[in-house]
Structures are given as C-alpha cells and as structure tokens.
Image 1 (cartoon, helix red, strand yellow):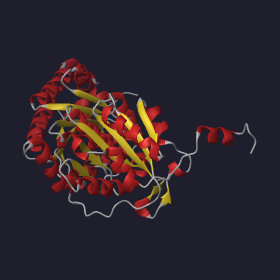
Image 2 (cartoon, each protein chain N blue to C red):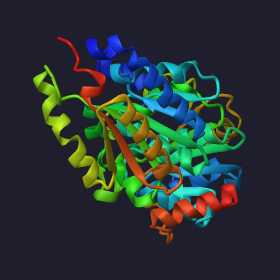
Image 3 (tube, rainbow over the protein chains, first blue to last red):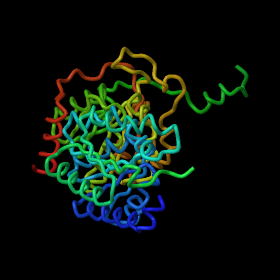
Image 4 (cartoon, rainbow over the protein chains, first blue to last red):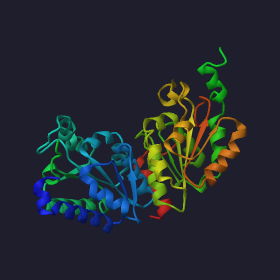
Amino acid sequence: MNDQAQAAGTLTKWQDEVYDLLRRHNVTQVAFVPDAGHKILINRSIADPDVHSIALTTEEEGVALIAGADLGGARAVLLMQSSGVGNCINMLSLINGGRFPFLTLVSMRGDFGEGNPWQFAMGEATQPVLEAMSVKCLRADTPAEALAAVSAALTMVFQAGRYVTVLFRTKLLGAKRF
Amino acid sequence: MAKDSPKSNLQAAGEPVFELDRREALPALVGRHEDFLIVSGLAGTSRDVAALTKNASNAYPMGGAMGGACMMGLGLALAQRDRRVLVVTGDGELLMNIGALATIAVMDPPNLSIVCVDNGHYGETGYQKSHTSLGTDLEKMAQGAGIKLTRTVQHQADIAAGARLLREGNGTVFVLLRVNTGEPPDYHRIWDPVENRNHFRAGLLKE
C-alpha cells in the first residue's frame, strides 16, 4: 500500500465497492491465487457465505473454472497478478473458442514504481498477450477509474458475453516495497 | 532380485495393470450417463464420452485447452449442487494440470466425481509413454492432494465398486481406470466449442 492511498483512506473503500459490485451482478464464484493487491476482495469472498471462494494452485485453473461455472449457469471472476496472466494463455483458447463470458481482475506488477526487476517482463507483456487471445483490457489508475472499469466490464461480460480484463495498475495499488 | 530391495517393495505394493478395454470398461463404470453432467478432456476421453452419450446435451467434450477438464468440472459442480458432475479425463490431460486436484480437494464438492482413463500413453500424438507407464501413480497423487474417496479400477472385478463410488461418494471422488492402449471408439463428435456450449446450456438451463 502506498502512503498516498493509505493517507486518503481510499484503498479499502474502492475495493469494498468493487466487491459489492461483483455481488450485485450475481458473481458467486471467486477464484484467486493469493495476491497482496487483491487482499480485500479475497478476504471478502472468504467471509461471504453465499460465495464459493476458490484458492487455485495456478491461474489457468481459474480460466477453466469460469467456463465450467458458465455451463452451470453461474457467474465467476478470476483474481490474479499480472505474472499469472502468462500462466493462462493456452487455457484462454477455451474462452475464446467456446465464447464463454470471462471476467478477470488483474493487479499489475512491473510498471509504475516497480522495484523488482523480475516483474518487468511479464508486466510489460500482460496487455499484449491478453489482447492476442482476444481478451479486452480496461485500465485503471485511480479508484474512480477502477469502479467505472469494473462496472463497464460486468456489462460487457455478462450482458454481451465478451472476455474482459480490468488492469489495476500500480499507480492505483502502490508499488510493492522492498 | 533381493527380497529387501526397493523394487521388491514396489512389487509387493502391486505393479500397475493396464489390461481393461476402455470401450467396455468405461461404459460399465459410468452406467446410465444421463444421471451425470459430464465434462471430458481432449482427445481419447472426449471420443469415449461422445460415443457413450451419442453427443447428448449433458456432456461437454473438449478438443483442446489441455489440462482444463477437472477445473471445468469444479466450476460446474459448484454451480449445480443438485446434479452429479462427472469429469472423464486422461492421464496426459490430468498430468498437465495436476495441481487442480489440490484445488478440488480443498473445495471437496460432494457432487463431483473424476474418472481418469489411464492408458499410460499419449494416444493422440502417437502413443508415446506417459509418466504413468514410468512409475507415476495418479490415485496416490489424488490421495496426496487430499481427495479422500479414491479407488483404482484395473480388473473386471473392480468395476462394480468403482461404479458405486462414482455415484454415491459423499465428497469428491477420484477413480483411476487403468486400460490397455486400444483405441477409443471412433465416434463422430461435435467439434465446435460454441455449439457444445449452447447445446449443454440449452439442455441444462432450458435456454
């Protein structure tokens, strides 16, 4: 968490609002690989008796889970870090090929203020590889943009049946401290 | 070989037997397919399931996205708690995403059963040996992942108990069905993943 976001008290608030938005749109399966950027969403899903909170061993499991949920008439979301996007690529052929509605929220590493050199390769490749698999990317740098992007993505995914990622960028989340 | 060598211990525990014919053993194990919602992994097991169900709407056969079948089954099982979900996958498909067994074991939905049709080979690519021909035991990996209800079916006499477990397990079930390298049925299946999705949802959700 960066000092600015903490001081403004905005970090908790917008992520709680994102969770409430997901629930208002009847998302009942929340799949994730543990991630500091998504901590609030993950903890809300674990505490929510009406939601299946699914800890994955690798992100591509979440892609297939979302397709299975759709076959059963349920809505799911995948929470992951940008590094996890690389683990999903071939599994996205299930989404793209089968036209399964697909929503993922990605916390970015390897951009604004990143201090870990290992994060840059996948961070910089995140959007191009998602787009190469026909997944549309909406970017958010502020809490207001995050809420607007998640709201837009929910309509695109569950009304229009599209495949959409919202990228929570490090300007929004704060770069990890080392 | 010396009696106390590691090899003899392995033999005492039972060497794997790849003898059953999948075209007879799988239908016998599954029984009435209409009792399940089915997801099948790419290649051989999708041919098995297409032949078994005659492309009925209760099955979603995959033709790619290797490693996805078990997790699709989990998403479906969590969405449809009143229906029994059956994943039919192969040894190669399961090995590609073996961590999914840990994810599934933690969730432990009581309405999910997994059958792994294990012929010890990658049939689709020319029958190269898979890890299960070379010492890997997928039932033990399922147990190690935390799945409590597991069984290996490798003789005709094992089928009845395996079939009961698939239908009656009160927790996620994993059945390893060891078969020979005979070809899966040559059945014309629907290849279009969109058509399969629409077909499945129309049947289940009355869309």
